[in-house]
Image (cartoon, rainbow, N blue to C red; front, side, top):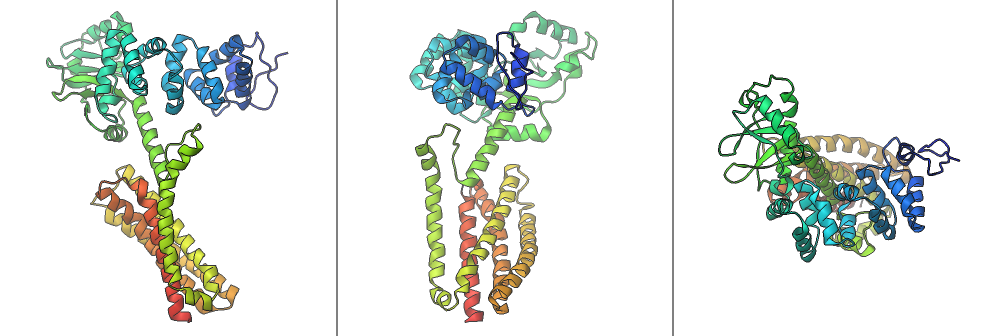
Length: 476
């Protein structure tokens, strides 16, 4: 019996009569995430080596969902899932796979099958997959590809990583300035198999094949066939092949670009970058910044224990050194702590509040640097704002802490010391959170990677020193 499909809690039984639409509705929730029970169905079919059932389940999903599914199933079943895919599905799923999972799967397939799959992709996606192979298999796959596709991939791989040349797809649509709308439309219809899979503009080029403008494909439908492309062409923002992909992504975001031409050293059109490529770059850069702020590497869902340990241990070691520095400061006031045990109880509060305040200021500053909202003209305004915020927050928290400490230990002088220490430490936290990443940025270092360690060191050392120093002067 087949009940109504649902991504909720109702039962669902997969039978031969279950349609692909019902399966897809069951497989994906309203949030487009895979239903865990559908994943279990796939795992059961893989364990039973039921290829026909697996094929029906996989056929109900789109390539991105299949790639997501492959990441969810246990590693020893992934090869089974991929082997039931048709050549077309295999080709479409490859670019969607998590990079680490894709590297593992590629080793299981022959160069001939990989060449067939890669040949059906745009040159940018094909290059991204081929570069994951070791040199011997890369050469074998390239040798098995048709000559035009092989040449496009080899050209892409010749450009440095993380540049526009590596990011671009070489398939573009270009037309001379004197062509009319009618000629352009006829050209597009004459050889549809030679068109890029996704394109938004026709680049208008001069006799030297330099882009002088672009005509949106939608624009062709609005004007008479006799209108020349030079009359319709709009200015374009082009990028050089060696331009950093972060700069390209920034320009796309700033100018709301959908696509843009890429030119070589002589200014000739050699490819294009489309917005779908930039979405991937922005996600990658954002993930890198988030991971760097936490002092960890890119640990995917299949990261090994040793790999995660090795990625995290270096910065934890640096934290150990800064912790020893804080301990040295505390040891200098050991006599004061022995005389007034309340200091040992309260000093973690001062350091903790300062650490959180420093992290807040640091996060805001690193974000502004990543979005290029900061430069020499407004950096001082940011520092001044963070100091004002720290002062206001410090005053509020200091008042509450002073009352709490005074009532707790029946010593209002102790409460006053706590209050002053919190205000001073929050000011130090605000200054460090803004100035440390700004300084690292000026030194051409990634502010997201190492700022956290230095800011934490400042707030700990300043917090302990100020609190214990004031307590020694005022209370003892």
